[in-house]
Length: 387
Image 1 (cartoon, rainbow, N blue to C red):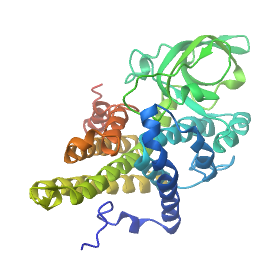
Image 2 (image 1 turned 90 degrees about the vertical axis):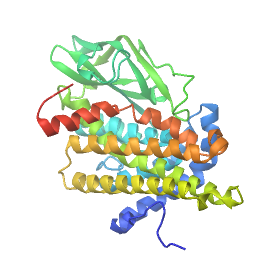
Image 3 (image 1 turned 30 degrees about the vertical axis):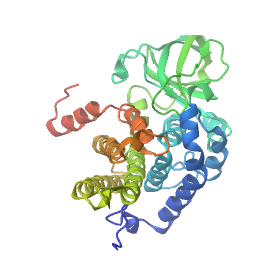
């Protein structure tokens, strides 16, 4: 029998520090013991397992890369491993942690006032408050520069009007980081749950990310005080920098989904017999499994190097785009092929590939579609913006 780990063919784990391995082991155990036993039912019932949030917070997984304010101050590779192990369970769980950490806590930490940090970051880190990120709009998610939501000054307040779409955590959020155009340029605002004129209805009838809360946000003359504006950034670079942080985590998360699909494919192929032999004994299936391992291994090495660049302060947005494009495409292809290897059983929720496949249809679209990331890399290579 081979001594190679089929889910870590190049022993990427051997390149991790002792602390990074401990983070991976802790989150892997949480996924095995707490996520996997409930996630199929949650997906079928279109329910986010909110009961897991306190334990996610207790493990220090919310805002894990931030310093102070009750955050764990882990490095970038550790945050990537958190995303990988959580998405091995389900993209919806990783999405919750990504949004809370990279799209809510990170901009408050990077751009917020000290008062905003003190008010929100400890509560968000402890899971006592939940946040969402309002950027995407109904008419065009890939062009945030064409934003319609606007905020106008009115004395010491701002009045916000507009709408956001496909917002993870929206209807359960205590605070929304909302981006709106102003006479000064693009600004970020903290809009609290219950503010008059602010509504966040949940989006139902999804066939993807069913174990995640997805909502619309509507703003009808929503009045927020000047103190709720993020003072540390002006312009599109604010939300784009947030997305770079979240996309980095996605590059790792997709690996976890693909690993889950490969594991189930190998086990099923060893157990199922056709024409008097296990299907894993055929050249066709072995080649397909080998191709999955090749793709996963390439993605692992890509994300590990990206994480090392991030921790060295040298990570570039275009490098994140290449990894998000490659790794999510890899995971979606692996999930689809795993579904096929399982034959008729592949469409059953008893097995994970169909669930991961459906989830990844969203992951490949949100936070930059595949085409957008291709164009980001193309612009880096040619110096020409072809958007």
